[in-house]
Amino acid sequence: MTAGENGSPGRPPSVDEVMAQLAALDVRSEELEVVSEELRVQQEQVTTLLGRHEAEVRWRSQLAAVVPLGLALTDGNGKLLEVNPALAAAVGVGLSRLRGKPLSVFLSPEDVLAFRNALRSLSRPAAAERRLEVALRPRSGPQRRSELFGFTETPGPPASAARVQWVLAPRDDGAQGQGPAAVRDDVPHDAEAWEATDVVGLAASFAQLSALPVEEPDRQRLLGRMATLVHSAVAGADWVSITLGSPLEPQRLGSDSTQAQDLDGRQLHAQEGPCWDAYRTGRAVTSADVRTDDRWPRLRALAADAEVRAVLAVPVREGGESTGVINVYSSRPEAFGTANRRIGELAAAAVAGVLQNVAEREALSSLAGNLEQALTSRAVIDQAKGVLMARLGVDADEAFARLVALSNRLNVKVRDLAQLVVEGDTDLVIAAGD
Image (cartoon, rainbow, N blue to C red; front, side, top):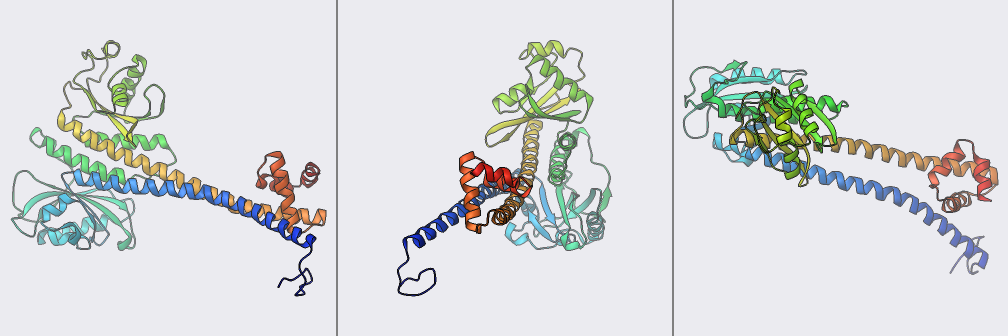
């Protein structure tokens, strides 16, 4: 049984009533189409962001796995939250069993107090890095003297909310732990400790890179800070610059010195050099001395009086494509060997991860803005419907139908027409629709 307009049963609807119901369905369909389009755009952005997040998680896991030093993330109480394979091997405990345990249980009792003091300091805002010499106490085997570096990622309080990154570097002298831990303010840079210090610098720089404020509005300043951290990671480096985009038309440039800027400019003027080859080939390029390197004759002539001698250029890659280059410069010829190159490649991976974080933060901000715009648009459309209902004496469905019809005719979005109505241009909109 069907009901007519008056709700009485038994009478089939008239043609006019059926047409009115079909018109109402058309209006509802148009409304749903407007909302669906907004939701489709937001869904695409959410899917893209999820993909970026998964890629970042994979990047962090891969980088932590290849760094040959122990990396750990603890809360302000010292409880292990994340651990890499190197640390698990150093303490002789499986990865899955380490999470949730206090890091202090793997230290000599004499070193626990210094560790807790360092942890307490790193859990506070504006904390500086802390470096300790401790005796690592694995589940089996002898104790071993190690360097323990701590960096604040997220301060407390409370302590459970703080996040502190730790880098554990066993010392090469093989000494077993004797006596309490000593807080150190320096890292050895002698020739015998050169390679170990290289790796420590990489791990420390990685920890600090991951703690950089990706919401930093000054992108130039962020690139400069990254250049400084890469400088500390690669032994033999005197100056560092980072080029984003093609060397011919860079999108952004960041450096830690005028010397780096100088050789960047000479390469741009010559339109050749290590930076250009690294970007083009997607592989690291080294030069023992740019003053005598025959691969780039124009640069060789321009660099005759430059302070830079040796160069290590490492591409920054994303999705298999070069997106920039890290240029590491030295005043000494033949400063960069195989070990430096490998460390430079790992540092480039860390920089790529930070830049991806920055892009994700910007995309999230854009998504939030689009969602807010979608909600605002809906409210504006409802306001415009109310204005047209009052001016034309029609119901809500007819008012929206008029907006949709005019939108199709003029190829203008419904929300833009609605905005005109709300802002006082109702007569112009009505006239355009007649």
